[in-house]
Length: 329
Ligand SMILES: [Zn+2]
Image 1 (cartoon, rainbow, N blue to C red):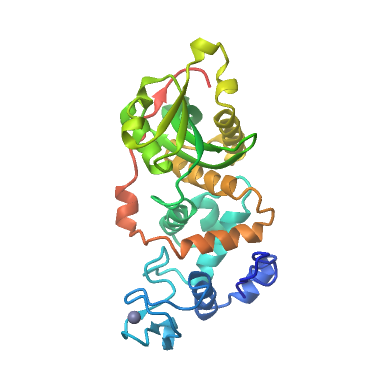
Image 2 (cartoon, rainbow, N blue to C red; image 1 turned 180 degrees about the vertical axis):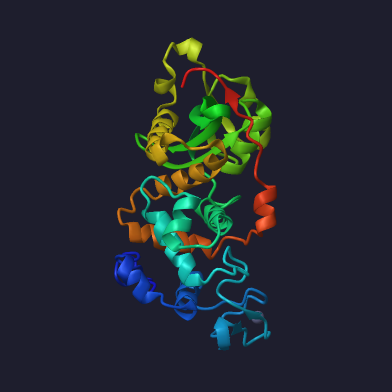
């Protein structure tokens, strides 16, 4: 089912062409486990404990036993699906739904579509999938990378129904290709534009050794200490407007804002922004994947190599908002 040829995954063979095919292919736990097993070990099973390769012994409920060391595992052990109480066909439907929502998925939407009993279950599923969309500490950008911050605004219902204008600072890193075009992006909501916020973002998002293009802001001064080559564009020296100096960041920022506007009427609450930034990143970095089914395949492919995140950790890691109030959009 999972293709290994150079042409890459194919609709109708490696991933479903539509909702009906999805339901037909994955009616139960066993069918989902078999699919995840092929995605996870595409060149054949490798024991996560002793690293021995070779066909495992198969037991009930998808358990696999290493023939060399007798270690027991499953296709979902050590992934975001580990120890889930949600049936895998429901997870697959959730992945399908998320990758088919052009303007992003909400927990409420997911709860309604899947008929989930609780909002919290839908919310937790979305946040686990988010971990797979942008794998922390992996896939760092390389080569030449533009870095800058942008303000993302949103309205929130305030007390007595009044609208309160809030803004968040979003750090953006974009791979720049020569002579033109750009590669992958990483985005993160940051507290402010200080070195304390920007430097950890660059360290997480960009491989050391990369050339990092920034403006003249002092917040980036420590970058060379962290192994980066900093190319500074001083705006006052060139007189260029920001979008001329940082064309890739400017382009990504405007795409992000347009996408957020299309998401639930643009009323993205700050608390949801982290999730949406990761979803935007996932979609942007796979923008050449024209087929929605291929996005489903890619997200599951990343999900089986993403470490599990217990619910308590997701909740604890929710970052404070640090929103900047006021100012023009
Ligand atoms: Zn083993």
